[in-house]
Image (cartoon, helix red, strand yellow):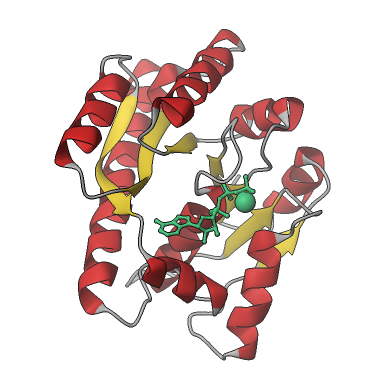
Length: 222
Ligand SMILES: Nc1ncnc2c1ncn2[C@@H]1O[C@H](COP(=O)(O)OP(=O)(O)OP(=O)(O)O)[C@@H](O)[C@H]1O
Ligand SMILES: [Mg+2]
């Protein structure tokens, strides 16, 4: 079975597609192992990730990313066996699908903004997933679109951390450059500004650390 990372949220627009695309690109770039990766777009009406992969192809950006739209989690799972790693870009407010892709995942990433409007549904979703049998160990919060107020950022982080769920230590700042990169089929680690790429990569690595810890803990419990 492939390794499945599901990126989900209750709220729309929190950065699922942005983070899923970054993970797909960074895995494809990893040295020394050729992951056969799939970016599974579970929101065929918007097809954000799929369309992005077409822009990427038009611009001949490397590495190649395989992105496909799927109408249901079952369709993703039927295809998943052909890949080593599957990154699922979830649809917003699709609670049944969200639960299914979370149940099938090795790790579940929930992106969130820093406002209470974003944080509360984030925590509610994690609680709902846990109530439905998903181990809290595999749920990871990732702060996205953070602004320049250190106070706001640290309050948001503290708010998430007091829940006991995993919180990636890095974060993704809200930057026009990240949007512009996405618009041309690039990931947030592939912008024209090295400093922003490095910051995004630190965020990616902090997510990876939580993924590794989550899986080690899970394995230890089996
Ligand atoms: N760190 C960021 N800086 C600037 N813009 C961002 C950042 N993250 C996301 N965005 C922008 O915010 C919008 C929503 O992001 P994205 O599409 O990744 O969210 P989503 O959770 O996948 O949305 P949906 O729920 O509609 O699928 C997009 O226009 C995206 O380019
Ligand atoms: Mg999306």
